[in-house]
Picture 1 (spheres, rainbow, N blue to C red):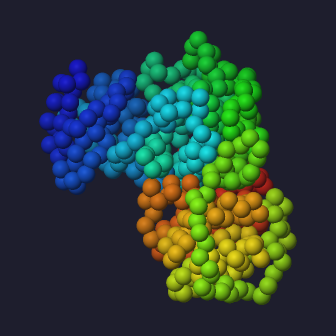
Picture 2: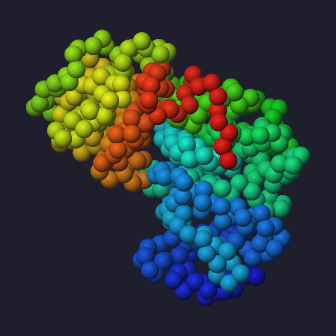
Picture 3: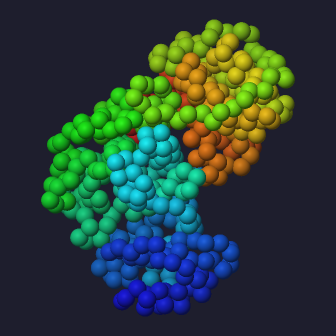
Amino acid sequence: MNLEKLIETFFAGVPRYTHLATIGRGAMGVVFKARDGELDEDVAIKVLFPSLEVDDPEILARFKREIHLNRKIKHPNVARLHDFGMSGDFPFITMEFIPGRNLRTLIEEEGPMGLDPARAISILRQVCLGTHAAHLAGVIHRDLKSSNVIVDEGGGVAILDFGLARSSEGKGVTLGSTFLGTPHYVSPEQALGKPVDTRTDIYSIGVVAYETLTGTLPFTGDSQLAIAMKHVTQPVPEDLALFPGVTPELYAIVRRAMAKDPADRFPSAAAMEAALAVAQHRPSSGGTRIEPKPVELPPPTVEAAPAEPPVAPAQPAAQARPARRPVVLVVEDEEDHRAEAAEALRSGGCLVREATSGAAALELLHREPPDLILMDTTLPGLDGFDTTRVIKSQPALAQIPVLLTTPKLDRSQYAFGIQSGAADLLNRPYAPAALLTLVWKSLSLAGFEPPPGMPPAPLSESSPSVPKLV
């Protein structure tokens, strides 16, 4: 069936939707941009060719399963799926339409020699955060690649196609009994048909990182089998270190993510994101850093009042398992919100200091640097985003993780926060458990041990094992 006839036939069966454009077409099906007349918004519709339901029922089962898997993941860096339906013989999924380009297209059009490292790190951090959210929900992507990552005009990232790691015949290869979707991004254990866990996605993110920084893929070959086997046998090309702005720290991150043995990779996507955040703001000769937007600091109008007795200054994050309670600086101008956050943090084993403005926080930071900063984005004067930029521009403060809270957390806000240097963002109002989960995620990566009764922190450098997910 030609495309024009397919469009006519499909949309005749779903009068709710009006065809606007054809986004892409492949061996499994086609993706349309359409107008949802009931919700009055644009959506993307992924349509599966009817013959696949007969020829390979498992593909249809995976197609339906994508809705189930996606609904388990709640994160700004994962594209939202809406529903599954049928138009005659055509199975389809409706999903969020994201204006933007996939990362592969972005690289081809703007960075044939690789994107600027500062921009690349912002994108890669968001890929890690979205992937980590999926892993926490028990989902392994298994087919992460640059064409499955959408980047919008504001730099926001959305990962697509969770649960559809299998392609149609002719678009993958089989080694043993294991089907490979895209051999350019496949992990060694996938290529060898071994069991996979979350670290297979970390390997694929490493490949995407190499591609984003250089404009090319690390391994090519005459056949899909040859490419897949290079992932098993060949080291990461050393020419990555020669690209402008690729610091030794960034080079080491990519090499570790692409380690042949899963045990040698980052233990979690959260750990890889934390390493990228450090590399993003660590000064290095020859490296490219995000420069802070010039900000004129107003004189502090409110003195920062310590909420706890004075404690020793925070030790560097590199020190493993500090033998003390972590110190969190809460920066919030509304007294009720500040008190709620402080109460939750104290109940979670933290010492708390408080500041009521960005300027007051900066003054306190230079006197008594904490282990983590929890800051609202809507501060008067110097807001949370600008304060974060100032913090990350100071070598003595840049390694302190910043968590931002915001009354409206959408993809653009999330991207803006990551670009400013935040470790993560949290929608306000929030449950104390949600706050403590994010706080201890960052503190655990810095070497602190969560107190008994706290939710288990995401896998960090000291984690002994990695759960296998489905």
